[in-house]
Amino acid sequence: MPEIIPTTHALGADIVGIDLAAPLSAGDFGFIYQAWMRHLVLRFRDQSLTDDQLLAFSRNFGPLDRNPRHAKSERQMEDSSDYVNVISNVVENGRAIGGLGHYEAKWHSDMSYNPVPAMASALYALEVPPAGGDTSFASMYSALETLDEATRERIANLGCVHDSSLNSVGQLRVGFEEVTDPRKTPGAVHPLVRTHPITGRRCLFLGRRRNAYIPGMELADSEALLDMLWTHATATEHTWTQQWRVGDLVLWDNRAALHRREDFDGTTRRVMHRTQIGGDRPF
Ligand code: OGA
Ligand code: MN
Image 1 (cartoon, rainbow, N blue to C red):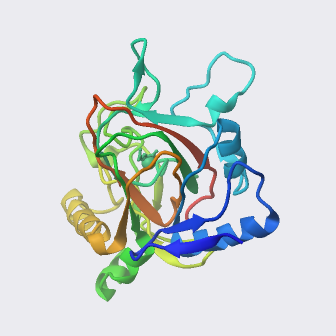
Image 2 (tube, rainbow, N blue to C red):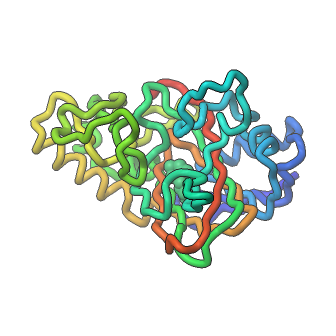
């Protein structure tokens, strides 16, 4: 059996003693799944995975969502690039091989602007820079549980719009116009407090701060409430930071955890491959 070594923080654990390049036995999968539900973010170090092995591991958890950066092309056949999202600052022959560059990615939950967001993401490190580019995670169980009673009651039945116009480093997505009034932000509206469909625990579901808006509220009130919730939710007591090594695979639960990435020196190389596992509609 593999072993679980929790971080000493609000979330995150290492799973040691397992080679993810091989198919998972039902027993090992069950063990990993339970650990994941408890710790929200799992790290598997010293892996050596092809894209097909990364896809096979990810598919244990459910059907995958397509790579959100990969516009439907004329190609008739699907291939692994339809599901493997390259996250990289590397430019080859004048073309970026992946997304997000070397910029800071502010706190977010992947694809939360969709009506049915990805439930999980798996990010596998092929090349890491000598410094920077750390990825932090925040537990939204812990964030909700430590909110004062009055605020919890106030937000219990509120929704929030999750901006679909900007990617996680703040770049305008193709086909969108810049949002100037958050009351008109495009994107899905989700409950601010959601119930995790597997654990049954409630958590904050903030998604992304930029252009967020709580429908039905005065804009200034929405801004003030969101600022307060975000400051609380991303306080260090709820977080854990991953410093990448080549061969790390980190699996996170987008339903109950946020993540952010530090920027890094753009003249150094960082190459990661990500899969996104399909989820269900937040409730
Ligand atoms: C992502 C993301 C974090 C990172 O792939 O969803 O936010 O560390 N990236 O690159
Ligand atoms: Mn992300």
